[in-house]
Image 1 (cartoon, one colour):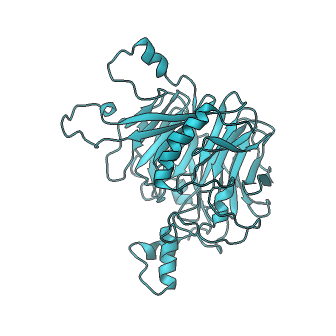
Image 2: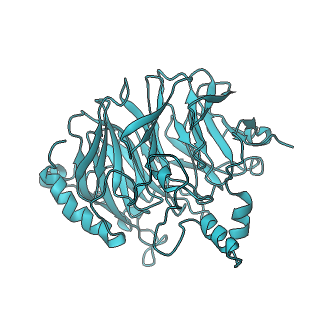
Image 3: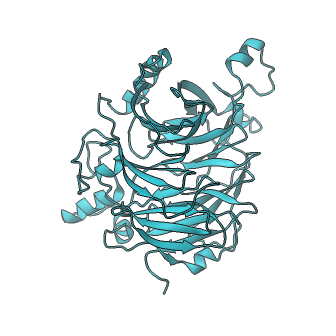
Length: 452
């Protein structure tokens, strides 16, 4: 690997200090946690976000129940509906949920569950995003709120760890940050629009030549945007660089002037940018937000996958020729707030490309451990997901189906037929449920048990 650039050194000084303020960093191998478990896939200790105990509500409730103490507020409910190793594959169609009116008038191309599984975001090719309340059958009589902030197809959607903020990225050269708190009205406009390189332009002001050169518009497609480091930062991929932004949000309603624009109350600032070493542009990226890790995965147009330590600005691993075509999807396993996520699970990630393959990788060995290829993917960027229980991999397909694989053996479990090409899939973080969206705008749900 090449030596870190001057920009990387600056990144280490600026971002490393910020990351160190929330979590102590150390020189560690390319894993998403501090300890390295054995090379097998046994059940290692539960990952801890802090030294105070298990990191999820389910884990804390289970520990309290085992000790004979109170499970805490909401703990009993979570224990009753958490993922269990005994549950079967999610291959039973939920007819009532899937029969709800289509939330979009255009092709659905991306979807994502909220952290508490009470909502699902469905992004369309026309630049709109619908926020559907769940279960769909219970809210089918209410039209879901629609986010209108983009002029081209959505490339990625991402919920904040708190579930109150939402990021959408688009081919129109922008990313939008939205206030989607369940106790507020649907937003009419985004809180922030990331469409300039370093910071938002001053409303109504004409920039000088020097200012325009220092803060140009993001003239290329934004390939993805994600919250990072427990919502502390925003990562954005545009062109050949991965950009890290800090952001500041003012009060929801201005206290001094109710007519002041949101741009005067909310802001973002570029902290640093990591360019790819050889590729012309970034095709996609992934980074953890539900636990503290400084690592990011970046896929380039040269078919490579780079692992970058954002705290030091150094490339710690490079996987050359990861696929036969440029990688179009990177998806980390971040676990679930309703389950005991094994530490080893945080070292697994999925990649997909238009070569018809989905690969499961293990960072501990820097190798592909499963190659899944029963589905069809040659034209559209197709989504794939690893279940919170680490037992299943789901992927869309262009043959009007979705495919469910056994993550341990790589074998095909079920082909779930649809009326159109399935372009994205997602597992519920709380229930044993699989959602999929298709080019006809429909969304279907599958469970581990048939409907009664």
